[in-house]
Image (cartoon, rainbow, N blue to C red; front, side):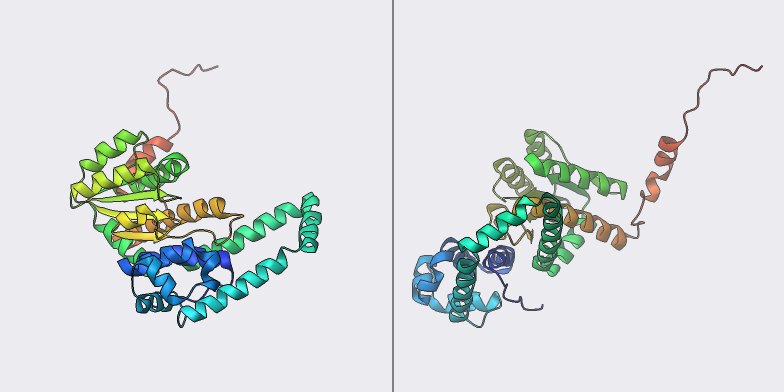
Length: 303
């Protein structure tokens, strides 16, 4: 696997750590959590202090930094120092006035929003673990039944994914009501899979459904913005991706999750020999009847 490259901004570093945490061991995850919790203090903390707060060894701190793409903790500190300098310089009053002047031009707002979203989606794509994605495809392709769960704004992507997988010839469901999600999850088996979608990775209803699915022995696949979230920790396969900037964090994160679900569907259909566009061969007759022009039994009047 290609080693991750150090991100160029402080916010990108946060997204990078969150997404990479799913690949780390328990002690390394604690280090990652400590780095996130004390991001503003990193430039002032020694390796031993990070190790103490993470309840691990200094060697584990160094190893974690290397897994994140740095040569060691001191290289990470140097990068954070640079990020802080650039951030402080950009936050000077003159920069704030320039940003306000730009925002006052309404015609420029849409260009700025679309350009930022495009850039952040590219960053989100770079954060996704391709090996984890491949394992998720294999798990879904071999599953007898697939349960998609999501609450709040994550409910719609879950339902859309279930419909797409069903069109592809899979037995997939996405109950709307939270208790129905838990009931359905508990009735899964070791031959089934549960895909949980949560932006925060901490939604209680989604976590309860995942716990029920795990009790049933189903494979758990999480799609979230944080690789150190409770949902990611409970998953067998964690797909963490999201925006590297706070400005578009929620918006771009949800788009990225929807795109990941669509990509999973296309990959599973391709692996299973089903068409990647249109319904499964088993559903062609259903679609033909549904799309057929309405025919009535009323006689026509000839003139």
